Length: 297
Image 1 (cartoon, rainbow, N blue to C red):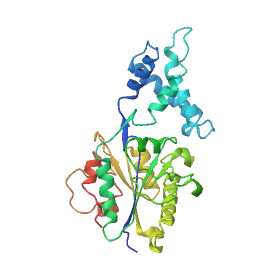
Image 2: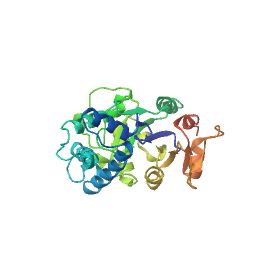
Image 3: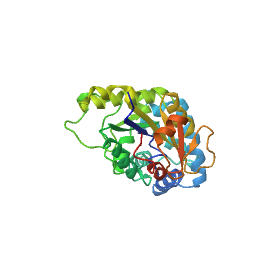
């Protein structure tokens, strides 16, 4: 049976949104407002990286692997970032970690990339061509804050996530920008592990069941599965390893992997045909990808 339905999933951090200002800048701003000093942004960049690496090894997957929980996990990283710069006898401000966690849980800390909404609207056009089904999801290595961040940035996000039971879902139907969210925190594994992509496929069938889809929509052979992300190792290789096609968004466009076909030129043909031939393509922005949508079989 010919493929005509589309499952499009996207990475979150670095693909859909990015920090409003460098993390070190925002950490410094909040810390200085609470009376801390004696560090530069370069200092905080280095100590944050060290604290993040240490905590990721000690309590993998944002604290889920050891049941620490994401809030305590981030608190440890924040304290680890600033501890080297505390003066003798100086204590860590009690509300430093809560303030930073709250900031990076919303649009206060992040901004959405240009062309996210135009991209999502153009993707939905595929569903209006010949009655095709379109499901849009997010697959991300992150803790459980991602849906709140996306909603704060103005997207309409279905609360459906990998560990969500039917009883927790709201009644009624609504048009969403994002139909489900797969977070490594829920799956228990991080990209490029294929289980992250298999979790998305599971939520695809859940979505079809809830929409009373026809029998044809439950046939895997009728679906294009495409993943969009900004990291080659985690996103492109992860998607290809799970049997998906991949789209790399490389805004710097400095080193394009040999197995990724660069597609910034004006569209000439069908993205579906190109992906069927090469498996992975690359663009310098979501705007360039949007030019190739809706899909043309």
